[in-house]
Amino acid sequence: MNDNQLNRIEEMLGALIKMVGENNSRLKTLEDKSDRLESKVDRLEDKADRLESKVDKLGSDMQEVKSSVKELMQGQERQDRILEMLSVKSIETDSYIRDFKRKM
Image (cartoon, rainbow, N blue to C red; front, side, top):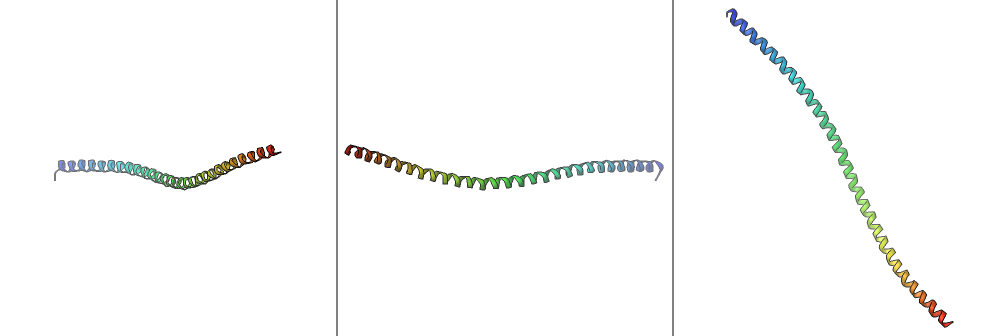
C-alpha cells in the first residue's frame, strides 16, 4: 500500500469514527426522548386507572341514587293514597257534622 491509500483509509476511518460519534449522540437523544415518553405513558396509565376507578364508583353511586329515587317515588305514591283517603274521610266527617247539626 502506498501513502495515498493509507491517507485515504485514515480519512475514511476518521469519517467513520465521526459518524459513529454522531450516531451515538443521536441515539442518546432518542433514548432520552423514549424515556420521557415512557414516563408520560406511565403517568397516563395511572390517570386512566384512577379515572376507571372513579367511573366504577360513579356507577355504583348511580345505582344507589336510582334505588333511593325509587323508594322516594313509592313513598310519594303511598302519601298520595293516604291524602286521597284523608280527603274522603274529611268529606265524610263534614257530612256527618252537617247531618248532626241539622238534627239538633
